[in-house]
Image (tube, rainbow, N blue to C red):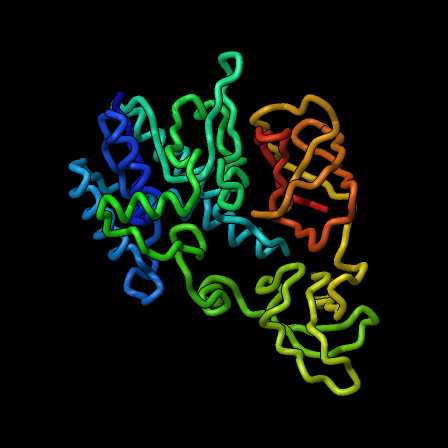
Length: 352
């Protein structure tokens, strides 16, 4: 079987490639280059990542193909990212990157070039039940990435391989070290998919106009000034610049609401303030990988959150969700992902 693996230059995809080769697959690696706007910046790691990927491919004795999806990334992922910010939402570009680039452009390339399957270093599993393919949680519950894969097309599941699905992250690093892979101690990337880690406000200023306004408390009293509502997200604590106020308790402030009609950022001090919690939410653009067996499912509204019990009322590709317990920092533009035990049912965008 010919397998094309996405080799990013990180430890996870490196070990995934090693495991596929060990199993006897005919493995080819593909390095995706998807961001070109500021390749010369200190925050762009694409050159270093490619060199690491090349060294891993050479060590494993597999071919490495460079592929450029920068145009598609800008059209499908980055444009969505900016549009959502302009509409007052907090987008998740990593989910769209998986949907349109890694599991669309990349898988299409594989199909057009004679590969039988595509693999990545994601922590998740593909399970076959009664000849049907399902996306399932990984063995390492702390690293499970089904949340980020919830928007991919169901049709591609039958052609995917996730070699790390039954491993712990600690085991992955141990394998990389034992096999003398150059990436064994490389730090995990945490920035925006393919754009990397960089000062977020400074980066956004290149693409979105600054629109300063007032920061107010829940009584609408002005306590500061914000740099533009798109720089903030619900529940945010850091970077508000409103500490040390007179006649105010020395407690942290949290973003509770973004009032776009009045260009105001509403903040509260108590971490359990009622304004930070919601029990109901609306969802749109739901991508179903498996339809729920009943209206009682579990869900998460952010990566690494524990599954939360809820009831769902489905209306086409939309739904109304009622949680058993109120959820903190429900954020428009982020994604809610549904589960039945270990099976990822899919997910959609939070509207509220």
